[in-house]
Image (cartoon, rainbow, N blue to C red; front, top):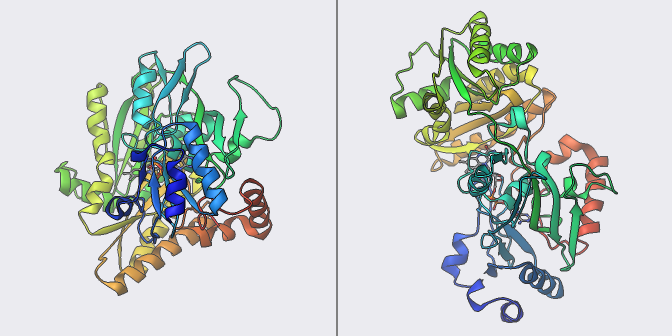
Length: 454
Ligand SMILES: Cc1cc2nc3c(=O)[nH]c(=O)nc-3n(C[C@H](O)[C@H](O)[C@H](O)COP(=O)(O)OP(=O)(O)OC[C@H]3O[C@@H](n4cnc5c(N)ncnc54)[C@H](O)[C@@H]3O)c2cc1C
């Protein structure tokens, strides 16, 4: 331990190497439930690429595991400490190095907060679309680590679509450059795409070249109330089938609607069993909203409320933004993340309601409906071991249902610790064996974020 700290201090400023157990304990885990975390040996805050390389060379020399961390807002335990590890926090590498409006790219360090990048590129009339709901605190490095999605993915896609190139420190301290600064490029295997979503298990991202888009017009939203979630899901499919491209399409089921209604006194009638939010950032959002609203009415919406302007849109979207906070008022919550083909959304949400009944639990669902990406939120009493066990079982039942419906065990939160056992079920033995060989090629000593993903 003192060897490790002494060696780390040879290449890092004194204050960047933290061993105070109270501080290191505070960095032990991300925001996932049901995930254990180990005792880190040391926490480091490098400020430069060379310092990260020094950390990885030291780790390799002493065979010490390393857990890269961003803001630890992750929901799968992927940033949790393992015993004796170096916690490698990248939050101090938070400089935006370049914004290039001609080539529509930004070059950033990994600790840049998503919202800070959005704000900085906005000044140039540009936007960085991936917008996880945690955007005010999560980092670009963490977004790359988990291939984050967000509310606007239905139109603009996820982080994977916006990472053009990466600077990555490998397990032995070597610096790898992947990808490009150009709009196109197909030279060699696409290592950039492989690294996006690799949850810190293949290398440490120390720089990213990101694609930007021109800022779209402000979006206008509507809220549609439905007497059943099934009806709302059918409306989602009908809007997409009709050829519309909404910039946001979010669904809240009965449990989450009721929770938000009582927290924020939104005045929704008891007959509202589901709330569908649709937004457009097109050239004529008023016309698109009117057409989408008609489709909602045709499929059973009892009320459709279009916003008159951006401020009203934001008010409508508040219900969705408050949903996790509102569910937290009901007990301890556990957020799942299962994506199904959009056409199976109704079966998924109704199936979750049946699982809630079977396990005698409250489970609310909010969904990035346009992507078929559901977030069932299991509510339980953490002080009751029997109920906690039931909650864990219901969580597994939800993933099984997602796979049965042709979906995936995680749409955007990643595998981490939480879903390791389920990965093999989804990708099969051939997929697992090949992925293990890829991991070994990048990290032959198994030092980078061990025990995560596999
Ligand atoms: C309220 C709330 C809302 C959320 N909403 C969304 C949402 O809408 N969409 C969504 O996708 N997620 C969402 N999340 C989950 C989470 O915010 C995202 O996964 C986010 O991308 C994590 O970023 P972070 O900086 O906190 O990373 P961390 O949690 O610290 O790390 C995440 C993973 O990335 C790895 N990592 C971090 N930095 C690096 C690096 N520099 N190099 C290599 N690996 C690295 C870590 O090892 C870990 O595996 C939400 C979470 C909360 C709490």
